[in-house]
Length: 373
Ligand code: HEC
Ligand code: HEC
Image (cartoon, rainbow, N blue to C red; front, side, top):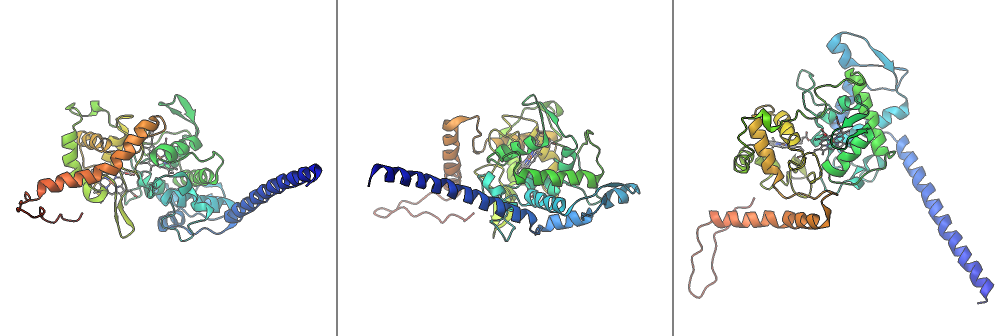
């Protein structure tokens, strides 16, 4: 082939590649737009919550919750059809971040799994009641990590970074560390939809911008709130085995029965990482506070401050993923520990429980069978 012919071919190839990329981007953009327009299949918890809060498109919004609790009729700005779908998607993301309950797994409104490394982490595991935990009488609960109460704090001073963090960045921190994942773009639909949902929650609950409510964040427990016996691994382990293990598993890896999550991971590959504020060695007051107010599920507020600190200390010594600050060596070490520890423990424990093997001359040692766990 002559030189000019070769040149034209190269240019044509380049144009083809760039054109292809452009067409692909247009296709993806259209797909995303179509999903934004599609009706939303709500999870059971979201269907219940959003209908109880009277979410419908219209010129004005009235909160049944506020009416019922205060007798006041409040009318705030209404929601468009687009807003309603964004709020619904946001609720789904909190309740079922990885789309485990969804039938249409590949759809954009469930695209949060792209941002999480584990298989079963979900925002609702910590921000319970789909970010709006209440008792049977509809009272919001202290230290329950309410997302509506968090939204009204708007830009909140963050004592760890020393920055005013907007609501979107606080969400991003939870993707990276609490859910051990990756940072979504600040304008990504997962962030915008969750923001729409939490903004709606604050309207439904009648919360005021800038007011600090007791259900926001965690009711932290510093060592000074205890008898100052020191945090104890042995006490923590015993308490964990007695009160938590049947739901969260012997190594804290979570318990799943027939695809149903009995309790999520508090350690291991599915749990928050070492850069999360839940990690005792990073922030020693948050996990105990979470446990005291929110666990054991169904028997909340039954543990003493010391017990919560002991359990939190024990849990934090179980192997879990490293965060981005710990570096590749610690990450490798944690990965190895997470893989080895469960087997090792099962092994040593069963070796202790089993009757001593009886050596028979000329035969391989026969061991008593180990109970399946
Ligand atoms: C393992 C527990 C856990 C999971 C899972 C989790 N979070 Fe959080 N989240 C926390 C804790 C603890 C805090 C409070 C940190 C603090 O007080 O500094 C928090 C704080 C937040 C805040 C700021 C709230 C405030 O009042 O300051 C937002 C927003 C948030 N999380 C959103 C999310 C979203 C969205 C997800 C799911 C992708 C998620 N979280 C998953 C534990 C969790
Ligand atoms: C009856 C079962 C049950 C018991 C007992 C229980 N939990 Fe949980 N725990 C859960 C469930 C379920 C969730 C997720 C909440 C949700 O999805 O609404 C959870 C969530 C958690 C979380 C935050 C989410 C995460 O990713 O781990 C922590 C921490 C936790 N439990 C610790 C404890 C501790 C400590 C105890 C013992 C004092 C305990 N739990 C006892 C069922 C239980």
